[in-house]
Image 1 (cartoon, rainbow, N blue to C red):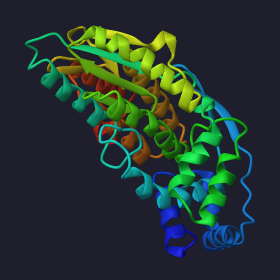
Image 2: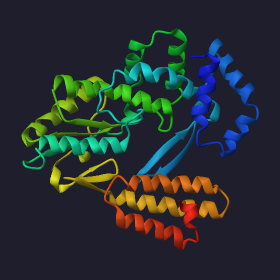
Image 3: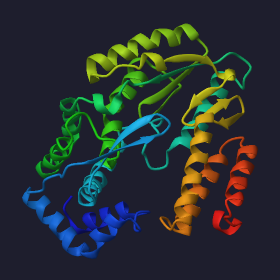
Image 4: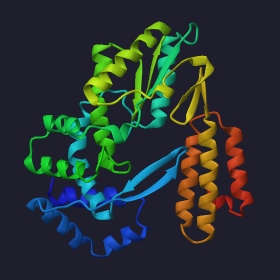
Amino acid sequence: MVAWENISGAWDNFKNGKTRKPEVKEFEKNLKANLNGIQKELKTKKYHHASYDTFYVKDPKLREINKACVRDRVVHHILFRKLYSIFDRAFIFDSYSCRIGKGTHRAVRRLHEFFRKESKNNSRMCWVLKCDVKKFFESIDRDILARLLFVRVKDEGVLWLISAIIKSFPKGLPLGNITSQLFANIYLNELDQFIKQTLKVKYYIRYCDDFVILSRDKQHLENLILNIDEFLRNNLGLSLHPAKVTITKYRQGIDFLGYVSFPGYSILRVKTRKRMFRKVLGKIEDYKSGVISKESFSQTVQSYLGMLSHCNAYIVRVELIKIIKESGMTTLEAA
């Protein structure tokens, strides 16, 4: 873990897309000395995690984000690079959050694939159970998490660093750490295995703490709810969010991962569309005031255009481009 190749590689992973940020520029001024310092502290086990900066984002609900300093985030990447391959191979295929080659778009495509199979190309009824874990990140039991990690990790230095990062936050896991994303998948892999191996569910997709199950049998889905909630309570100290457990006919539209999916097509979720326009308008102001570069603005626009390419969104795309043009941005800057 403390080999120079891993530490320098972690820096490269971390700085991707962040090179213009003041705190990253400051760290990079004395890059070799800073990375050498991290390496020495990890080798001698004298590394101490600093406190977090806390801020809130509305996405669409208000979320508390806890941001570590650059030095600590580099350390997170150092650990992540060594743990990812160890644990990722143990995950089920249909876990899609924060995994190489996965993501929201693949999860939504998989949802359509499962629907076609279970409904026999929309020739018979298909129901979808949609669930959300209540206050997931803040409810994670760190003792249970540590036990799950220590089953596969035996190196004392790595175990020490895992403990240091877990204990760097007063309760649960902080949103924002790349290690938190991996730890979340390790934690909920227990649920994945229970649903697949014990409950024998065939059509199941999970993205972080949101998951869906498809079936032709509505009663079967209703029966699963209690089994899943009991497992979460008894084994992981978690519970289903009572207001976010729904069973819906697929043809009525399934609101999942920013899209609403229907047989044969998806549309952008209304809240996702509103958030997209709000963020683009904010980026336009940032660009005009010199806060961000042309390249940064272009990357934002391209990201949203890419998101729209995965659903039926011609009108939304036209509206987005119109907003950009009316703001005085050229097509070159928006392309």
